[in-house]
Amino acid sequence: MAIDAPMRSGSIAAHAPTAADFERLATYPHLVVSWLEADGYPTSVATTFETDATAGIIRLASPGGMSIPTDREVGVLGSHIHPITGGYDERRHLQLWGRFDGAEAFTPDRVWGWDEAETPFFEYSERSVPQSRRYLAALSREKGRTIRPRLSPFWLALRTTRLPFLSATAVPVLLGIAVAASHGAFTWWAALLTLLGGSFAHLAINVTNDIFDTLSGADEANTTPTQFSGGSRVAVYDLVSIRGLTWVALALFAAAAAVGLLLVAVTGSLTLVWIGIAGIAVGVAYTAPPLKLVYRGLGEIAVAIGFGPIMLLGAYVVQTGRLGWEPLVVSLVPGILIALILFVNEIPDRRSDAEAGKRTLPVRFSPDAVRTGYLVAALAAFAVIAGGAAGGLLPWPTLIALAAVPLALRVHAGLKTHYDSPYTLMAVMGANVNLNLVVGGLLLLAYVATIAAMLLA
Amino acid sequence: MGWLPDPVERLLDVALVGELTVIGHNGRPVTHPLIPLYHEGRIYLHSSTLFSKKLEHIKRDPRVALAITDPVATKGNPDRATIQGTARLIEEDPHSDWERLILRLWRAKEPSIDDFLKVRVALPLFFERAVIAITPERCLYWAGGRTDLAPVETRAPRSEAA
Image 1 (cartoon, one colour):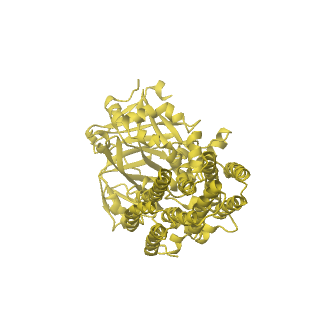
Image 2 (image 1 turned 45 degrees about the vertical axis):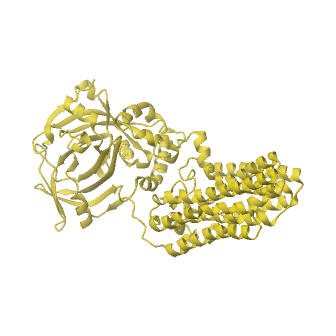
Image 3 (image 1 turned 90 degrees about the vertical axis):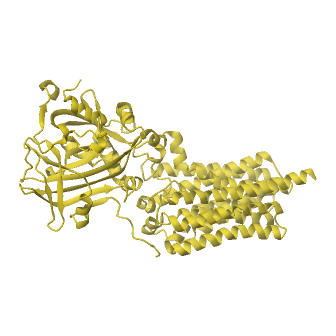
């Protein structure tokens, strides 16, 4: 397994104090000393201090008019924020517990803390999700009714289905329709139905993927999800139950099937039936047992087939009733680029994926191999366009899509710089999503120009 | 409305962070940095269910102490104070109780919270929150932050502490 760097420790978990803790503590300007008073109330007072890591003690300046007790546990806290406009940042704190000797020496035996420079707030929050679930479960028992986290229906639907990812369906479907139109076949309502059916299928597969990634523990193990990776997390957060997700997936699959059957009935194309069955099968087998393709490092191939030939040829067949070489060649481009979206989005997930037995390509290969693989595959997509145009299979205006090569190179360079930082990698993941949109958009533009030229000729 | 000394009320009005000490397992004092809000004699703190250990401690024992100690967090005001009191949790609906009760106060002190609220979909559990309402019972005040000197002690009038 090519996991290249040790996993970050997250928040500073409770442990016996070390020399590093004394060093950390020494950075705070004062400490807050707390204890329980005789009446049972806690109290606290700020004081100055010196650390002595060698002796394992902290020398506390005596507060005036108060006696730090020696017969019970005492806590000391160092806390830091940096005020900024509208709020604050640079949060960190360190809490130690131990005994005070009555003179000046506090001997800690336990320490806990958090430093957002080491564990970003979002990661800290993700690590705390189990605590939230436990608390809300206990609160539900206490109140005698179910108390769950909520989102408004709109945001919940958007999050559950991962709606923004529909651009991955729009590109190949629109390209398939455009290629068919350049061949003289275009029915607007069939085009709309194709887009609708493809979108339902995509959303159904997204939800199915979340169900199996939640059941396998892959999503829960992932404490550095981003807007591009780590799944919808609605089940991890208990916003939707697995049962609820199953119903959503079934409803979306049913909607996709209904649209597909309508298109089959209208076009009379049996080819469309096979394309539809292949699409659903690849989508489900992506995460569902027994195949679990993404768990075996075959996710990229499944995505390339699903969002390449299946989507694009499906859209083409709806319009023309037949298969063709040109749409097949064009389909390789979004197929490769959308597979690369998955490939890059798997990078920040690789440690949690490995824990859950999800042996994706970034889990299997070294960072260098992943970066090289990205470059080779992205350039292959452009080579398909150049070769297709040179061979006369694609109209020459499609060469305009080569203008996106620098964007691919930028993503490749970003992978080198940000490979180990899930949060700074987000900009690279966004650029990689844009690469598919830009190339797809330029290819669409090329086909529109081709169709316009045909109409004007 | 409250009985806390004016300088302490001023500290509470500006402090971006205070240190809340609750009673943990086995009587251990556990201290959490939190943003304190103050309104009509009551101190309000709030906590996401993500970081709800402190809430569990308060349920077991509601006696708490809140210290304001950091001049960096009080716009340079060097005074310090510790307020002891009894905490009550408000969490009938962790999704929205806090919005109704303390969002206005929170927003006034930390306006950037609105930016986070706009992307609530990205942080759904962060905004499932309990409000910790503290009734002050005893106050220790150190003018100029001189904790090497004895504090000025004030206690709640009997009717307020009850």
